[in-house]
Image (cartoon, rainbow, N blue to C red; front, side, top):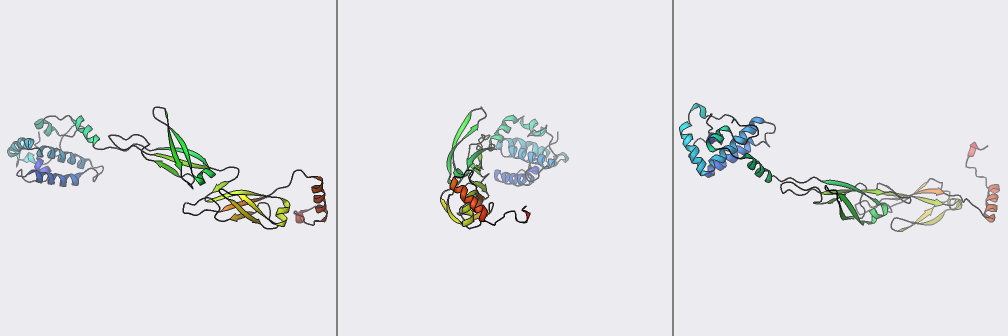
Length: 300
């Protein structure tokens, strides 16, 4: 059996040292050989175990006295130099330690170590859908999450006004449970904003259709539209074509900086499907007197 010089392992030349000196030496060696500093270095990992083993013996006055008797008999001999300790796989203590100080129940030591290292629980992510109007104004909404036991746990959340598409709402501590006293994970709720028949969200801009009669498009007009949270007055110039865009600044979606995007109107000229007698006469008259041909040179 190789005698282990615990003093040399801690960088001490003699056993004439007090507890403060032992503790200081231990901290210096532990810092130097810590596995977190020397990643994937097996030799340093074993040395770190020996350093902890040496400190465990020398920090106790009773085990230090027992060890010192052996140290006085062995120090200075050739086999008193440092060698890597022989230990069983994943064992915390060497054969030398177990022979002279008894076998330690390492399971309890390991469990104790684990308790000192709490870990946070996993985060959970889910998704909800909201309308453009609710996302713009903000809304309280109920979210249901299925637990490990298969039950539905419900939360009331506040969707903040102006939340962006795919933005997440975080609820602290509502994820999976932590281990060894660690904090619970968090719940993240991704918000998907749904377009509808009236509005389409494009970044910070809102797109909607502007429906006009042929005479409104030809003569110019002023119309009032219902925006996302207010009425909007729009001037339509004469001769506007179907498909042309009218942009109204600062009437779109919230940009998160106190401003708003644009409201973009897509012009659509609508023809009445049914005409009364008077309307039919006027359209026939217009057909005779109007020289406008939308097909131009392609006309037959």
